[in-house]
Length: 138
Image 1 (spheres, rainbow, N blue to C red):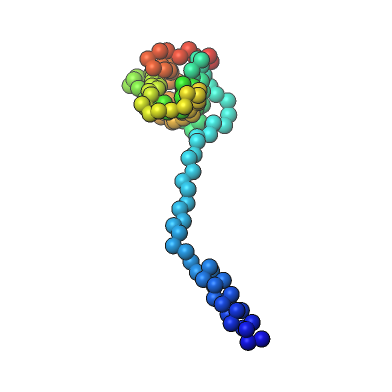
Image 2 (image 1 turned 180 degrees about the vertical axis):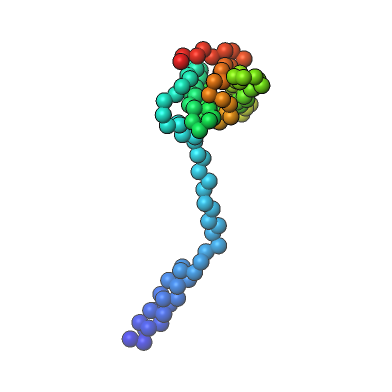
C-alpha cells in the first residue's frame, strides 16, 4: 500500500500539469464574407461571356450584384462608377481586371462584385469591362 500511494501522487501531479493553461495563442479567424444577391427581381441586366451584372432598385437606391470570369484567381477586379450630373443620371460602371503579377495556378475563376449607387429610379446605365461595352439584356 505504501508503494501505491507515491505512484498515485506522482500520477496525480503529472495529470495536473497537463491541466495548467498553455501559452498557446488563440486567434479567432476572420471569415471572408462574400456579398449576397439582393432579394427581388432585377430591373436591369448586363451580360457577356466574361461578366454578368444585375441591378435592383430598393429604398431609393440601386444595388448591383454580379460575377466576373477571370483567367486565374490571382486577377484583381476594380469597379468604378461614373455618374453624370444630369436628370436622369447617366451611370457608367467601369469594371477593370488586372493580373496581380503573382505566380498562380491557371484555372478559370469567378469574382463577385456588388455595390450601391445613390441615383434616381430613372437613371440610365452603361457597363464596361476593360473598356469594352457590355450589352444590356433587359
